[in-house]
Length: 297
Length: 314
Image 1 (cartoon, each protein chain N blue to C red):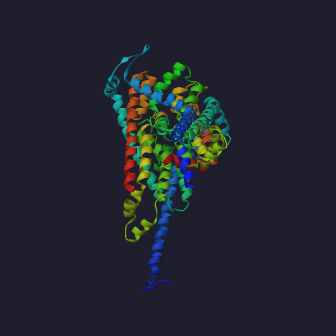
Image 2 (cartoon, each protein chain N blue to C red):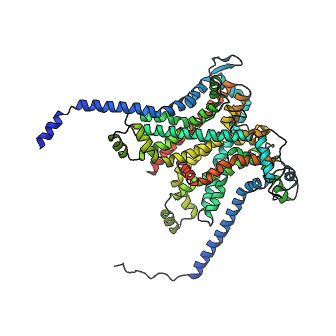
Image 3 (cartoon, rainbow over the protein chains, first blue to last red):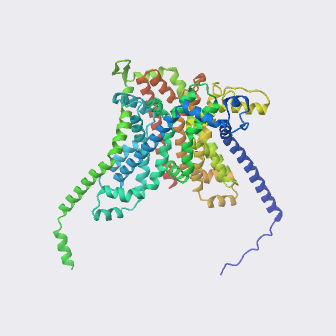
């Protein structure tokens, strides 16, 4: 069945094969070395952070920054000092509140909007979508001054309500885009069946579409939560009071205050401030990678 | 049988059907508006109305105590053009955009190509991605102490050279910008690399191998096969980097607080100072409008380029 061989294969040059394999192996070893060096550069600041938070201020100033700490105990004092001096209790609670409630509301509102944009028949959908999505195209600098004055006029400057209002609004457009794309790909037959059975639109939304969209909703919620947790700019402008400050604002104020505390304490504060987003990342890596894919491309 | 069908059809009132259909759509639009209401109200009220007010403010005179005074035309923009700090901010921002465009993409691409197929590939990728999970403010604080006169970098340099080195990396106008850019690259390259790897992995291997068998060098294969297919991804990453570099705030705000030679004065920081520290609200609004115009044109350029690239790929 198979076609006959026209030519005998050339005799194998074993020396050449061995030479090529040796070259490949050597280049893979050198590539590995280069990769290791690069990782070293990336890890060095983390190592510096890790050893510094276990040192007392006195130990930090006298020892080499790379020297391992003498004992692990000082981190307790560092954490207590940082927690008190940087008013981190407020910062952590505020940011958790803004992140959880703000991003949560935003994703629910975005899911409702996406439902209204994909599962119903009427004209002018595109226009309504453009209005919501236009919330992503302006740079943040264009919101600052008017919001500052509007908030002042409404009496919500430097309040939790004002901060939550802004964070919710800014986190709506992007999840709307993602959930709209997701919901328009979902089959509409089940909706129609439920409507035939007499279900109202709200039931269709809450009982059929929402449970199906939990995956992308979680992914976008995590992205938006992290954004709110990491935000410094808007807390600086709209919520600059110790009781209202976000955690990043607390950290920046603490670092910039030229307090008598040493780098070991400030870096402990930076580590504590980062812990929630680090924990979330490792707990929910898969969702983060999903979020990355939807946000990047 | 046929006849009954036709007589049935004849009896259907087409206009009534159309009317019912229209009523159904109207009802659906009403329901849709209820579903869209929270999103629309928040986006319009908290985001779009402020943008409009910002544009309005930039054309008005602002007096202390009395507030908005009268129409000023382009006077605020003229003041902006006359302010020497504005040009400093513009030049610094241009440097930032160029650096935050070139460095992360070139390094990200190099790392993506280097890590592919190497042993412990996943570990290396995770290590480079790791800084991404820290908040920019925390990164800025960490690197502030890396660069401090008695910080990590000087100690390492001193250890290597055997001399005492106490350069204030963030307080010298020659070193402050490169120093902060290194921090920026350290944090952003992981994301750029992951996005580029997603693009690279979507490229089929067969044409590359075919070209290699036909005698193409790896560089030829990259330039003529990989690069054109990677263009859409590169475009997205480019725009992400440009916008990130253009509006960077956290890193400069924390690390550049010494303002050596005004090198850390970007447009975003300039706007913050003029408005919130000096009370030049109209002036600040005009700066924000300039920032907005640049960002919108970059976004528009991206949409246009993407459209063209997609058409040529098809």
